Length: 416
Ligand SMILES: Cc1cc2nc3c(=O)[nH]c(=O)nc-3n(C[C@H](O)[C@H](O)[C@H](O)COP(=O)(O)OP(=O)(O)OC[C@H]3O[C@@H](n4cnc5c(N)ncnc54)[C@H](O)[C@@H]3O)c2cc1C
Image 1 (tube, helix red, strand yellow):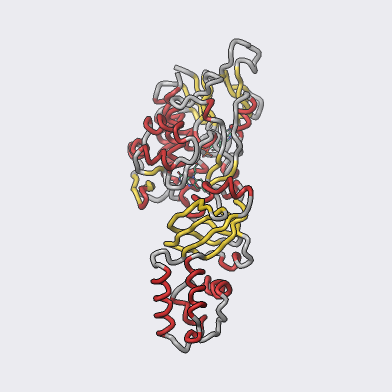
Image 2 (tube, rainbow, N blue to C red):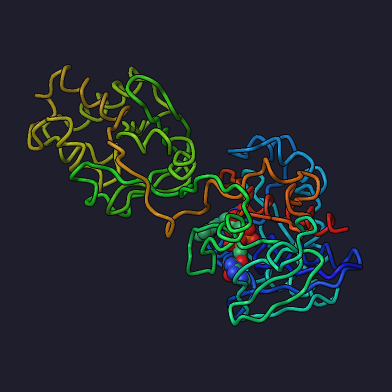
C-alpha cells in the first residue's frame, strides 16, 4: 500500500483518487477551493456532457493533439466504463444527439454528488481549502539518491509526505474554477517539459463594424467555411451564435481548435452558407418566387421570409440593393449578388478570445515524458499527471471529460 497525494479535486483528480483508493492505497486529495468539482458544475451549460457514448477509435479521432498517447488510457477506461461508473455510483445517464451523455436529471451537480459518494465509500481523505505550492523530490529534500517524489509542500509551508503524487490541477481556462496553471509550474520547477499553452474551444473575434448589431443572433443549420487565402482550413455544418465582438457556438468553438495557429499569424476569412440545403439555382428560384408573389412591395419588406429579422439590415447593406426598391425592379445581376451573399455571408476573423472564455487549454505537460499506460513521469518516479494539465485536448461532445476520467483512472491504477 502506498501513500498517495492527489493535487486537484476536478474530474481527473477525483477519478484518480477513487481508482488509487480502490486499489488499496491510502489516498489524500488536496483541493484549494471550498468544494470539489467547481468546473464540472459549469460544464455542458450546467448539464455536464460527461462523455461521448462511442467507440475508442472515435474518442481518438475527436482528440486534437497527441492522439496516440491516449490509446491505452482510452482502452483502459472507455466511454462505456464512464457510463457504468456513474450508473454504479447511483446516477442515471442518458445519451442525446451526437452520442453526448448527460445525467438524466440534467444537473451537473449530480455528477459531483456521485463522485463525492464514491470518494467517501473508498475512504479517500479530502482536504479542502488546501493549496499545494510545490512538489518535493528526494533531490529537492537533499537526498541525491535518484529522483523520485517524496511529498507536497502546502501553501502554508507544511510538508506532506507521500510515496506517489498525482498532479491533476487542470489547465488555465476559467481560472475562477481554480484552474490557474499550478501544475505547469510544478512540472517546470522539476525540470519537466511543458509545451506552449493557448486557449482552445474558444469564441472568435470578427472585424466587421456591423457585428455588434447581430449580438444574440443564433443561426442553426448553417455551413461555416474558414479560409486562409484560397486554402480551406475548416468546413462544418451546424449551429453558431453572434456576440458583440464576434462569433461563438458549437461550430465556432470547434473551428477555434483547428485554426488557432493560422489565426495567430493573420486574419482569416469566414463564409457562412445561410442556405446550405439549396443550390445557387434553387435559391435564386426561391427568391424569384418570393419577389413574384409580392411584385410591388419594397425589397426590405419582402426578404423577411428568407432571413432572421436581425440579419436583414446587414444583408441589405452587403448586397447593395436599395431597401426601398420595388422587387419588380430588381435586376438578375442584383439577385445574383443576393444569392452570393446568402451562400457566402462574409466575416473576417481576427483573433481568439482569452482563457476566461475557453473551454480547454491547448498545450501542457509534454506527454513525451509521460508513460501512456500509467501516466507516470519517465524522469521522476512516483510522480503522475492526469487530465487537462497534460498536453491533451479534444473537440466538444464530452471528449474532454472522457480524457480526464481515462487519464485519471490510468494514473490511479498506475500507482505501484
Ligand atoms: C464552461 C466549460 C464547459 C465545459 N463543458 C464540458 C462538457 O460539457 N463536456 C466535456 O467533456 N468537457 C467540458 N469542459 C472541459 C472540461 O470541464 C475539462 O476538460 C475538465 O474539467 C478538466 O478536468 P481536470 O480535472 O483535468 O481539471 P479541472 O476540472 O480544471 O480541475 C482542476 C482542479 O485542481 C484544483 N487545483 C489547481 N491547482 C491546485 C493546487 N495548487 N492545489 C490544490 N488544488 C488545485 C482546482 O481548484 C480544480 O478544482 C468544459 C469546460 C468549461 C470551462
